[in-house]
Length: 141
Image (cartoon, rainbow, N blue to C red; front, side, top):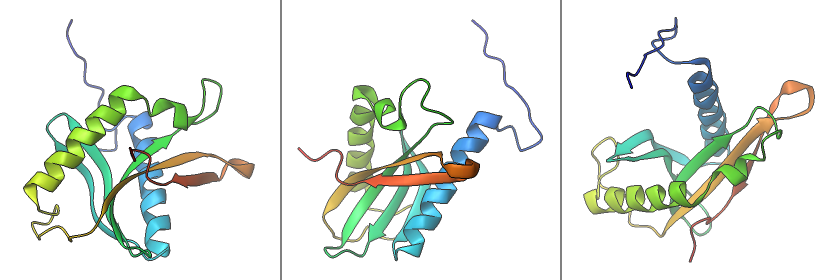
């Protein structure tokens, strides 16, 4: 089957991708307003993509990989439900590769902090304004 690329006025990004980008930007802004330092966004490590890599000042301070999930509605389930086994497995691989490299996206050494994976969920709220929830340590074993 041949793949068809959809060209848009926004640099080749579809409306769905643009919505995902907006959700990631919302989450990054919220984290920064809480004092987090964003080290990178949309890191591609093999087949894994890490949406946001940041430092949570804590206490305790942590190096956090944030997976952002968004939904326009709950008609087909919540965004939390879309964070299934396959995505979790890819996240584990991506985090391992990031730590193996020992480098932040800008090339600087990663901070030596405990590592966690958080899940940020973005959904429409009252009046169409998006709301975000953050679930901490979603891959804790």
